[in-house]
Image (tube, rainbow, N blue to C red; front, side):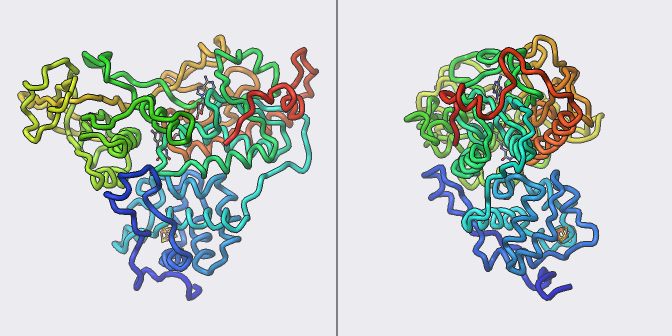
Length: 510
Ligand code: FAD
Ligand code: SF4
């Protein structure tokens, strides 16, 4: 073992210092700086170099973590980057927004955590490798060496569509990326707030795609601006990577009252203002009492965005406890530091118009500044689930309480839009509400039509979406290699140059 490694015996786990809550609440910038080169090398050197590296096993991309940690510890940064990007299209992005505490750094993953030494700071080192590569100009567009003459249309420019586009273009196909938004990035641009990942990171990855020859068609909605049959006719293969956006209802009375909004409407309006698409957020929490309902990452992002917009107070209601929530514990910690309150084991049962002065449950004045709604809720106790997994909440009789709010944000989660309706019945859904596809070939019921990302998995993570994009690209390439050459259809099989001429008006990037 080289001298550089196994320093966990003498070196403590240490992240870069977070910006203080007071400072970070005043802006939307990232809260963590990069590690310095010295600290990145030191933290990487804590790795034990396990014979069976469970960090790698639990990484959805099976990143070669032990090896790039060793390279970082030895200062071989260019090699570390090449190894990191060999399995991950966007290492600097995953380094920032992966919930490492549930993946490679979890107590069941990193041996050092199990042994009580504190996990290796894998995410922070991955980010450092990516940031260093960008700073030193090692990140390049992946142009193909040979064109295949075949074209692929991808609907959805989120991480699944982006990773698929990069791989398919590198394999020599003409790639057309369609999205209803004006920018490439999907939820990485319009959902995940800047305080978790600044937008220029996504924009520069989008720039690399267009530099490689991927043609982006912004403002194009499948089912409105582009018909499925037309799309299929234009391309030799089609990938549906349109995510999961149908908001799950609260299922309680009053959810249609004004001032009760879906989380994505709120986050998209904030993101659009942050990236300069609008002058100000369409929905602003400034001076409002805000209640967020839900316990996932979306709920945390809403809570923390409302804090930054200057909300008078923010409370998150979740029906289970902290240990049983789906979101990252790290994000809850950040939200608490920033002043958000958590109503654990609190299940909303109705939203009502109630005169504010009758609400006495918050003597500190919560809801007394022009609140317009009351959230009626009860407490729960948790019981073991018959299906296994997370504990189930059961109402505690007589535990009802009320909270006043100006803005109630529904962050209960999302479902996948019905592909059958969007494709005239050509593509089917699973009973669980995802796009149905063969597990191996990723092909749907429609010949040459594939699916990737949240649209196949249901709401998931960026790292899983990247894996999906890579796998679907391999499946599409295999399909195209076996496909007979198609005759040119009346609309023409789309090649890069044809679209560059015909679609210039809609091509936007970054
Ligand atoms: P998306 O990123 O959703 O991209 C799909 C694209 O399809 C979008 O650009 C959309 O505009 C487009 N589209 C949809 N319908 C149509 C249509 N009919 N026509 C044309 N285009 C269409 N994951 C993490 O790993 N870390 C996090 O911190 C994290 N935070 C999150 C915060 C929020 C608020 C949310 C909602 C999710 C978060 N996730 C996080 C999950 C992660 O963002 C998703 O799992 C991931 O983005 C899925 O990638 P995708 O490419 O499948 O879909
Ligand atoms: Fe290193 Fe932890 Fe991975 Fe072992 S599990 S190789 S200690 S990062």
